[in-house]
Image (tube, rainbow, N blue to C red; front, side):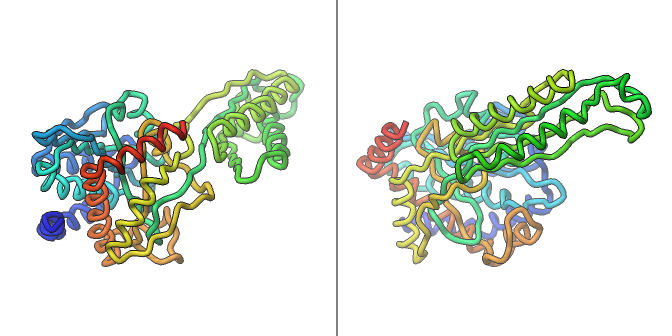
Length: 383
């Protein structure tokens, strides 16, 4: 394990510069051309066979195979930014941490055998890079997928909410505002849908959320709008129940369309995210590694919170998304202050400790056949 620490100490200054570079050049989802090229070039520099792009326009894949066959350990990189905010979710730190961990593990993998895969996963915030990669079979042959997310605490991760983004668009007929009898008001369909879905909330199970906004309500007050739309996020602790909420909401929208003789169109306007499946064996191992490093990490957060495209990966292979501390509790994620924390002294410490924890976790999974078997058995039994 001394080789891991030695390699990390050699690389820390260089990799902190990468974190700051990406912070200074934020790119939103599916537009991370500069960032994906930068990260892919790091992998090439350190001996990974790399393809960029691989399956999507801003993804990449780096692979290192030891001469001796063994398990395939995947490290996941995120690197998209938020509009206006920049890296307020800390994805600049995620991508660099995963790559540093992979390079550290490469230093000793010839001694134990196996393969290291580094996946560049674009567009986590809205467009589901991991969802698309999963559909395209990127993770089909992987044994375990690992990553860490910046946070205000060290933890082994937690459950996430499934999310289904739906747009209801109503089509009617334009008319002058003084002659509404000549038209069909599409906005009436939107307003009635909004009221109906608001009433639906009281009948849902705890832990479910509905967010809605009128995305098109017409252009002029004296014109009966022939088109109006409303965008929703339906969130639930499971993808099955999120689909149930979507079904109930769509029935309400259909009723509104029928009331006002409108045409209704239902579309998925962003990516659907499944809830994240927790692998408790992986969580226990990560907590043990943190403890060995002098870190007291929180256990799995059983309260479903937020949504992420890593849910798709967790249904395909055993997956963990722990957290690394970069700030105090008074700083909220998706803020400029959180972005700044990624390049602070605490952010630099998170890179060091996070990469080491990920490298050790990969090492343990490669060396300990019993551990890997327990991880995979839990995954199979939970399906």
